[in-house]
Image 1 (tube, rainbow, N blue to C red):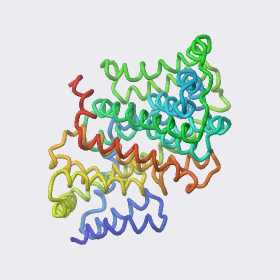
Image 2: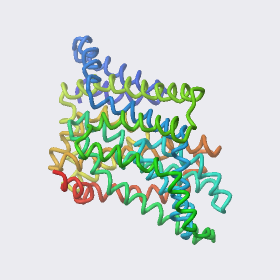
Image 3: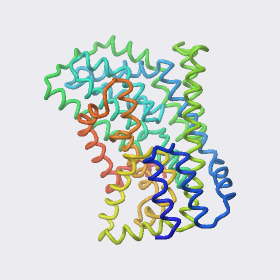
Length: 426
């Protein structure tokens, strides 16, 4: 093990354990590696600047803003209302409403924390009123949030597409079937939970109720059609679609639903700007980190070490997935993808996997980490909304994590799960 690899592999984890902020931990580890390798520090600054000069990266701040505007503008509440009239009469129907509403909202925001916050704030109290335990309802909101980064438009898919130079539009398509499979799996768990705990189904909605709910949500439901139709119709790029989504949320919030005002638009925008700044600062620093790893050929060294333990390609792929899941449990998913892109891309090439399938696998791995104790972002969001401790949420979350991992294994070992829809447009 050379000195640079030692600094990177030990320095970053040690600083994270010491609770050094992630961005500064990445920067300090990179500076230490450059000093060890006797490389001019100016290169780090150059890489930070060049790493953020990507048109595709503009999609991230605009999708973040769009998700926040949709929550504040009443879009999420109307989507929940429409989902309610569709499935509330089924066994476990109210839990299914939470999952279905999360899928609707995901097709607009692409963010797991935003989806958990928007759906959880509405559904957790309502599910508790109708016989579900607060821990189960919170766990379902956390798990439902994970649908967000799977279905297009997906912020993690944008980040991976930029870092790995993979088509973002194709990555969006690759996430559709895994996202739908996860939604179906979570809905099946809701049915099983309601059956085991004797939770009665609700009255079936009348045609008038269905029509009223649809009429209230019709403009919100047009969002995915406008955003995704624009991308795959060749009208806009994914980056331009993010701007369209933000403008669409503004129009609905101000002009149609009239729940956005000049008084609340400022705090919503400031909250989005804070999130954007953190993400872009991490991306800038992580680009320098990734360059050092590539320059010192560290990915190749680690790959060779892993190959020594794996006797077959299937076992090697399984080991990579376990490694990514562990990393996703303790590190932010976007930061992990940015830092490890230079290490992971050669592994995908070595395994002979389609870049789109491999990218979807990586993004979904780290996305699951957002719902995995003890550091998953969506768990913190769920805890903040419900007032529960992480341990209380973790127990009912375990079966849901099992569904997520089952979907992940399908993505990793069955190429058709990610490539069947992509193949229609190639």
